[in-house]
Length: 483
Image 1 (tube, rainbow, N blue to C red):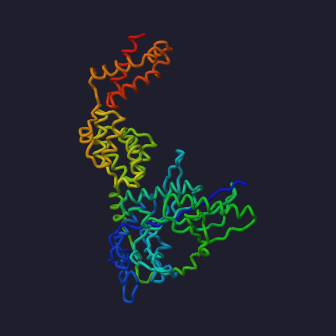
Image 2 (image 1 turned 45 degrees about the horizontal axis):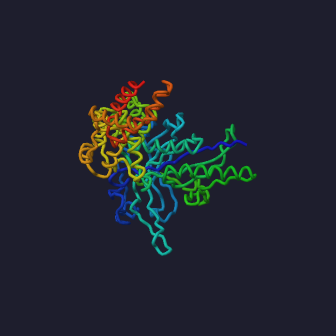
């Protein structure tokens, strides 16, 4: 039997407002527990919520970026359930009339293909607090600092058919919200979290299978692994003649397995009703159009521009536009160096390797864009070779200064003195009688490959500092004269 996975994602994105959705309490991350939750966040008697206009603006920005319908009239409901980190006993959210309606985005896969994923809607809601289970001598603690922080919950249609597609979708959402500047998207800090609805069905069937919901997955890698292992679990059950139960499950990354958390609730279980403390929010056409006019360049538009303006391949452009900070870094290096292709190669090669090795973000790069541009200039003007440039880059990453400072300090300037190089070539040829004789007796088609030995010896003699183009030119003249 051939099975098909059906995936829909619910992505929770914390908005980067300075204050909470319905109060003036701070949303700053990292404060001492329970120092940023005010009476309004806890729904204390006599308090009334006041909507945060900035959160609405951010939600509209997201909707426009997704080519989605904007809810000119949106309404808040109360979603009732008990959790220790939800002191109100309900969550203020949107159900019937969300701020963002249907839309779609295009995702790009590693095999070069792309597909469109439909957005069902995105709604505004407040976040809950956080339960802490460490260092409490067997007890749990509650930190309510996060309670009331504005979120948009982005709900897709069940359009994805593989874990890879789900990750591509999630990365595209991450890219859009960070380009817009409405969230930092930091999954490690909970700024972006994902619930995955997963079901399986036989290939060719139209009817959806029974789905399970995987809650609060906080990394791209774990999303891929969790969906894969859950789909395999469901297939095993069905092939053994069993029935998949609709439920909420947790993914255990240490054991790479999912386990049951609770039976899956439906809307009726939450007893939604309109929030009596909040009036419907009405947005005018002028308000929406003003926001549209202020949108920054988005990932797809930047990808297309990088290909046309900088003559980059689709692959390089896609790598460089995944993050706004990375795209900005590239543009700064490309413009300063005047060599966009070389800048792209260095960023996706040596710089990416360095950042991965040191587990740093592009914002934390020890080599700035202007420093990298300076290094590229010294390669293109033949001050140093590409091989030496890698040594210079490593020194720059260790804080030894600019490319020029490292080259001067370490004496790495490329030798382009034809007399000095000719002398080294003569010494190599004199010490390589057998190889010279083999070169003379070889077929003409084989001689270019044999040149590599002599070039390597001269480079070794010069400690890698001789100009490779000059070495090749002088060597060929000398060897051809011996034929």
